[in-house]
Image 1 (cartoon, rainbow, N blue to C red):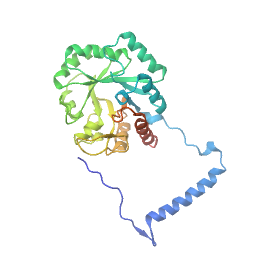
Image 2: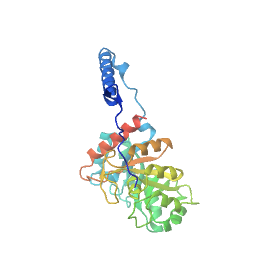
Image 3: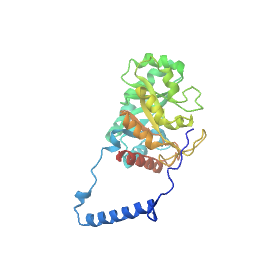
Image 4: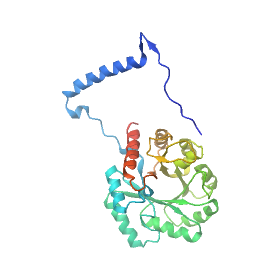
Length: 297
């Protein structure tokens, strides 16, 4: 596991005062001057220019985060926090739902100005389950099926997905994954020579628990990276608890900058797995952190 070290360096002396103190004094003087000037200025002249929301990334939510909330409560959460993209977990709409139920569900999110970017994680164990799952994704107007499969199911999914205009992103589940999708690097091995519609959902937390740096993995898998489940962890350990993004040990700033660098065009879904009965504060804090990081670029 990569270790993170404090960034501070020994202070250097500068004419009897520390460099830190000198910078503080200079900064305070500048701030006082700016406050005096701004007091008499037109607010429009000192206002920050609005920047594109999330620096162009499609930052949104995996509805597994609100699994204990209703559909209406999930929509209210998204609107409150300013989320415009969502990946739907079947706890909010069953895979066995009818086409009419799916239409009504899709329209409810559309009317709230929220795009259903994907569905999942959908676990597929047999060929009989694949086509109905893709029809579910298609009927909801999504373009990505986030799926949980093992290597033997790859040719099965590849055969059927050719009948659909959607992508399938295989989700990694870390060291305990019984299907062998430990990290995106393992999944990349399965995808050699397969249809380009097959790709990866990079779960940042599970990748980190494998002892891998999520940004480096994203760069290696960029050609097949079709979805992201973003999160943060409380400590660098295999067994650990999730925390709001920015509070934990994952270098989330570096990861977001990496997605901007590769011009990632797909969904960056926050998956906040803790506080299931009261997830909104953690979701709001995480989204706010992401927005702040990206606005500064």
